[in-house]
Amino acid sequence: MISSKRLDGWKFLLFIAPWLIGFTIFFLLPFGTAVFYAFTDARLPGSTEFNFVGVSNFSALMGDPIFGKSVTNTIYFVLLGVPIVTVGMLLIAMLLNLDVKGIALFRTFYYLPTLVPIVATVIIWRLVFNSEFGVLNGFLGLLGIGKVNWLGGAGMIKPVIILLQVWISGSGVLIFLAALKGVPSHLYEAALIDGASKIRRFFSITLPMISPSILFVLVIQTMYNFQMFTEAMLLSNGGPNYASYTYVFHIYKAAFTDLKYSMAMAQSIILFAMILAVTLFILKASNRFVYYEGEGRS
Image (cartoon, rainbow, N blue to C red; front, side, top):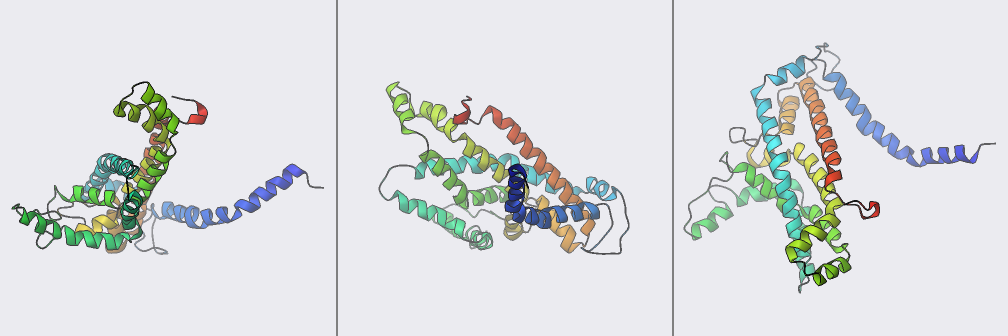
């Protein structure tokens, strides 16, 4: 007879088998393949003609100025873009949380861009921010302001990309809006009786109560910005002067333009390590700013 404990164990394995199979096929095997090829000189995926070169690919990356530029740009988007987009999401969610007439319609309108494929959204933004015939420059012309080289200026392309992320941040806004709706109203009532101002109520009640949602959005946005590709490629093709040349763009170029598959795999391993390290740091630091009501921690 099989004991009930062992039977429960087999049931557990049976239920998670689809996930285990998918995790093995779509993550473990590709990851293992990437690690293998990172130490070879293979030029094409699946190539059987290659030599083991040790850490030569990693050493070559350290001396590549274009690789350094891609790392710098990606760090810029992570360190500056993530906080700006996260704060923007929260501010928009607070506006959409106001109890005014027709607010449901505004919520729907703001979420609609999220349903549009990112490629289509970027193409629309190219039309809006085009330096010669863009809608935005046309509007500025009506105000007597000269044309701005939005996509062709090295100092403007990064802010445009960050602004684009705020535009397509409907999912994050929805998460924050749900978190704001979940804050108990009696906390605000008690604070109001105590004479707390709106700013005091925001920092003492709203932020602590929605801090788990802030942590989630922060981690997701960090991962997204580390892997940014579509915006940089379609808006400015990584330019001007490599100003929007991101890390994943460099991987794409190495694999599909320069036919240096092993070099692309080496970069992928480094990217995985960077994302893992930053994510673990955020989760570790979250003990200082995330409040879980059930744990009773401040």
